[in-house]
Image (cartoon, rainbow, N blue to C red):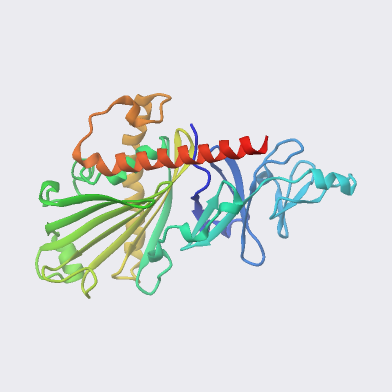
Length: 353
C-alpha cells in the first residue's frame, strides 16, 4: 500500500511528551519523539545506523538520544554528535533521518515527506483543544487493527450510530434528520441537522433546555489524510449554536496509519458546560474509550478480516448506501492525492537522471 507522505499526520497528544521519549510506528516507519530543553519537539528515525536497534531503547542525554548498545548519540536534527571509540570522521557518516514536527492545538503534527514542502498553514484547526476558556476536554488513544480508511468510513457514516450505539440517540431517528455532503479543498463535510431532537431528562436539566425537543447538529469535517472534527451541538428552538445556553461538544477523531492493517486512533472530546466537573470529564473519557474499543473498533476489525490483505474497500464492489457518500468522497480524494504525489515523485526522479 502506498501512503501519502507530503501531508500532516497526528503523531500523538502533546501531553505524551511528559515521558522521556515516545516511539511510534507511522506509515510503516518507526519514529521516536522527544521534547528538547527549549520546549521544541524533535522526531527522529528510531533506528541506530550501526546495529539497527531502536534509539528508544537507549536514553536521553540533554537534547540528544544515546543508543543503548554502543553509545552513538544523535541530536534533534539527526546528526551524530558522539561516536565513542571512533574518530570524528565516523560521526559524519552516522546521521539518521529527522522529521518535521509541529505542536499545535495540543497535538503533535508530523510531516513524513519532503520537508521543503511542509506548509504549516495546512494543518487543520482543532481549536477547542487549546481554547481552555470556553472548553474543557478529555483525550485518549485506541489501537485499531484495521486500515485507517475503514475507520474514517465509519466516522463519516452518521447513520450507523442508531444501530451500533442505540443508547446515544434514544428517542430520535436518523430518517428525521437532514444530511448533506460537500467537498471544500482537502475537506469533506458531512453535515447533519437534527430537527426536533430528543434530549433525555438528565441533559435537559444539565443544560437548562426549555423542552426535551431541541434543535441540533452533528457536522463532521474530514481532512486529508484522515483527521476529523465532529461538531455536535444542541440548542432550544428559535436559538442557535452561537447563543448562550447551547450545548456544544466538539470531538476530534485523528486517524494515523501504523501499517496497512492497523491504525493509531487519537481522540478527544470537548464541552462548553460544567468546565470544572472532573468526574464528568473522566466519565466521558471512559465512555469514549469503551465505545471505540468495544463497538466501532471490532466492527472495523471484522471488516478488515473479511477483506483479507486488501485495503481498498471499493475494490470489493460493495453495496453503496446514501449514508456512504462522504466516505466514498474521502476515499476518492485520498486516491487522487496519492496519485498526484506519485506522479510528482516520478517526474522528479526522471529529471534527476
